[in-house]
Image (cartoon, rainbow, N blue to C red):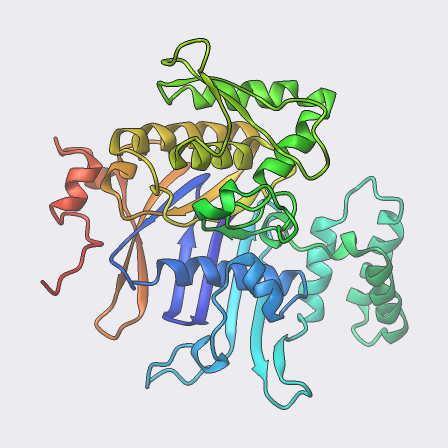
Length: 392
């Protein structure tokens, strides 16, 4: 799990360090920089995968703009190098310095090489002890550490890393990071041709993935857990994916417990958008094939205020159970009431702009609310914790 993210010189984020828990909620006024924070993490993920190209940016949720506006456009900020670092359970901090090289042909985004000592430290912490080459690689590292000019061994080490990429693997949670921003039209379509496997960031591929899982005998527990959580919708009776469908065909049978037995079965084309959003989120968190670390923008979309509270409680519990880490944004106060700030794995962060326009982040402390009779949603709406527009 990622314990801390630092972002420097990315869009409106000049210098921010964010301690993370299992479930993290960002609130703030429109344009304060919530999405910029998520995109900053995503560009770090792109650098860790050595995929600093616009197609990868778009697939991960980074809004592609003119390179001049990917770094701060404030008059007093001259540094045009984006710096992203992530602390994780591996107890080291990979740092990526990302810059736009206009002198390259063609011009492109690049990241500079890590200091050799950082590289060696990364490998020592990340190489599995049972890896067949572990002993040889660690001996090689020791030789290099004893003589920084040991060029032949350094070349051998680089070759080993090229042949065995896992030895140089940056935190896999960071590399998988995606920003999900669902669209109802994408959720409803069965076509999965443009999705990022297994689930596209706008909802693409949900039905194709569920159909694929339904064909696996070991997925019974997965669907049982999905259906159990969908029961927070009072009308939900059951869900079934019929066998024998053609490769490009998908039909999800849903049962409405309120309707007469003769007509209570309908398909995904007739259901409401709230159900589709819930089905996606539960699939995302419960599946062991989806990213372990991801973001959800506007997590309140399509949900009744009371449902918002219960959805957050469920997602927190499921994230803990299935080893997922979530960062979410919201503009709906009801979402806050699903949080328990007495749990250190749940964090509420208020995002605002400074007087200079920089994005800043403040993590709300539990002692700030402990003596209040007001709920978190009331505290936010009444202006006690910030994160509201202040120009009207």
